[in-house]
Image (cartoon, rainbow, N blue to C red; front, side):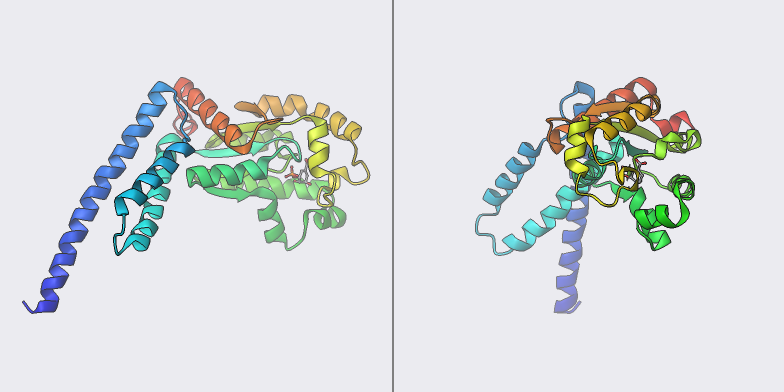
Length: 270
Ligand code: S3P
């Protein structure tokens, strides 16, 4: 064996150790998630991640490969979150609720915390049609838009472990709710009409509110939809006065409680 081959052998030996240790580390992550689930303690613990990063920095000291190793650990942490999410939710999470209830914001936040896939239904429609939501309403009318929503939901049934931020009116059709429930849980986000108004008042991408951008109209449309939203929801979270982390933690806790009680929806429907 020449010198180069000998070095490559040594590297291959290092890879064996890394693989073995990563697998051990990942199985510990699974143990942690089982423990958290069984004891009901919060799943997301940002302070713990910070502690781990601090400990890592200390361990690395003046290691010559400090930057590179820290970079690798970013991926290790990211994949830990993914393993955690996989063992928590093997189904899609549909966020529903009135315009401005925070569906998109919470979907992004959940995506970052759980490393799950995320889609925005409205964005999917806009991309496919090459038109904005307002243009679709103006040119083809609401029923046409609602049909696009229904088709998008059918397409989404192929996905697994995806967070779906839904358009505010999507659950009004009976069939749509059924499509969601096939392999998913439905999370309703609520907010007071005043909060909603504050969040959407400057938007020109909510054709339903065109010429009605006021608290009274929002309040009466919310009231008309309320029963339907509540019927479809598996869990409901009031968002007023809470930050995104609190809302995410509540969603996760309520979904876990529901799964403990009923089993996962993918098993229910298989
Ligand atoms: C609608 C809500 C919008 C969008 C469309 C219709 C509705 O989505 O789908 O303008 O009927 O409530 P957001 O809830 O994301 O604003």
